[in-house]
Structures are given as C-alpha cells and as structure tokens.
Image 1 (cartoon, rainbow, N blue to C red):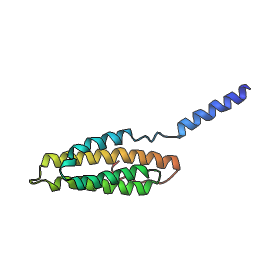
Image 2 (cartoon, rainbow, N blue to C red):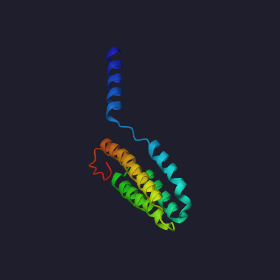
Image 3 (cartoon, rainbow, N blue to C red):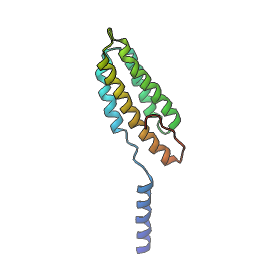
Image 4 (tube, rainbow, N blue to C red):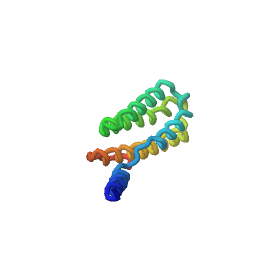
Length: 125
C-alpha cells in the first residue's frame, strides 16, 4: 500500500516537472493594450485581431501558429501608417507592443514545442 502511494506521488511529481505551463494570460493582456489603437484604422485592427485569435486557437500546431503570429504582428505594425500625419510616438508604442506580443507568444509556443518534443526556431526570443 505504501509502495503504491509512493509510486503515485512519484508519477505526479514527474508529470508536474515535465509539463510546462502554456497559459495565455500575458498574451491576452498585451492584446487588450493594443485596443487603444483600434480607432486609427478599424479594418487593419480587425485583421490583426482575427489573425492573433486564430494563432491563439491553433497554438497546438506550433509552426502554423507562429506564422499567424508573425502575420498579426506585421498587420499591427501597419496601423500607424494610416495616420495623417504619422505620429512617431504611436508608431514606436505599437512596435514595442508587437515585440512584447511576439516575445510572450513565442515563449508559450516554445513551451508547447517542448511538451510535444518538437523543434522550434523563435524569431523574437
């Protein structure tokens, strides 16, 4: 009986050590902070939002999700180009949010790749 209990505890500890957390809380916060810029060009922001949501939905497919992430960040970086005149501070703020989003999302994708024993090449990390 004690042996069985020991084996169960050992298996639980091993599963906790090998399974890396892949929650999207940090990514969701960054996406919420991009909403401030949605009024600049609603169509471009809607494209960004739809693409990043698709990347989040398909994050178990690491390479496809990374491709959608990169496409979403490129779309996000295009938003300030629709301003007249272009404000460099807004452009810098959006670029910084894009880098933070890329870093956080790729950190999660890297953890998923580790869990699935896949090879992953990050761009932002």
